Length: 430
Ligand code: UD1
Image 1 (tube, rainbow, N blue to C red):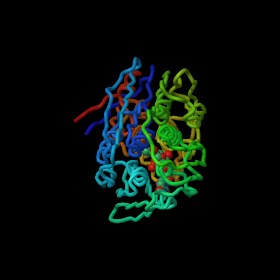
Image 2 (cartoon, rainbow, N blue to C red):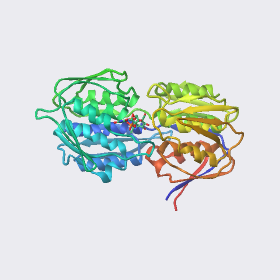
Image 3 (tube, protein in one colour):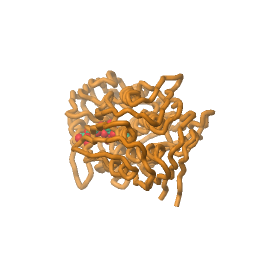
Image 4 (cartoon, rainbow, N blue to C red):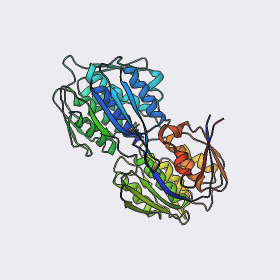
């Protein structure tokens, strides 16, 4: 099993190209199930989750053509992938595949809308909480679907004439349920109005792509979205938006290790709240052409309290990284997690590096220490694992991060991007 070895202490200097967003690429790829024409996606990141979804989509009948990688001068890649689903080959998404990645459950929307039925295994994914699917069930029921749970699967069936537009208020903000409702309602009869919808940029990206395919969606990016159903969608070409979580992660790495790095191909407006917290912690952040420049001093990190929230709040996917940064602040910081109830698995691993963190319910109290010391640590989930890498960059000596397959799910060429900027980071394959 691969491990990542980090020798801390080096500052980061240079350019880090930001990849296309995993969390946008996944729903966009799933949208290819909604048309018999070709959907072309540019800027698709090369990640384990994307590769798994390609396999899952293949099962459902999607033909995939990957255009060779194009290397830019700054070392970034941009993959263009063509997806064509002439006919749906199978409306079942089996446990073996769905249990590996929660987002693959989202095929339920397109399958139900296009074929009138879907049998989809209940999902798995990161072990960061119970992550139920009640909102998907309620929402699709509101569009007239019959939703039945049977032996670990959801059997979804649309009414005879197809799904029917409706008004639906999400009792809780959910990114995935918003994606699925956008897709399902796009091919429903009549108009759907969603209230308390997720406002994440990835929702806007999906809505833009669906509109390019002929859907009629307005209001994406606000809590109220209106979808006028259409009878069919066509192909389109769409560029996946930059990964705001990858952007924020590297910005925090620079703040922690010190240095001067330009994050290229990204957009500061995607992560205003997180960048503001970083500024308060002492990092210098400026918007430059096509990206963001981050100057970190590595020491004198000021303690800053954060509370995770749905967009535009502080993203839960950057919580672990920010906590990593706070382990070396000059005072006491509090990090409160409101989205997932079990997203503190990095706490005990950070403690192995010498961090002082205590937990009280959903709030962590982090007492900054002067120095972290490298140690062997275990990656527990996708975002937690990268917080250990960041902490390792600033720790004295060697840190070995085990179970890096978590990292490969969401960070493209992490060790290459960091080592180009002067970090000592390498992958060890046993
Ligand atoms: C997406 C992101 C993930 C991010 C999360 C929150 C992808 C592939 N993943 O996950 O990286 O951390 O948004 O920003 O885009 N919930 C229910 N019932 C449901 C669905 C969700 O109670 O039917 C709860 C969840 O347990 C969680 C909260 O709603 O507490 C938010 O989850 P949600 O926004 O749905 O997360 P995902 O879409 O799975």
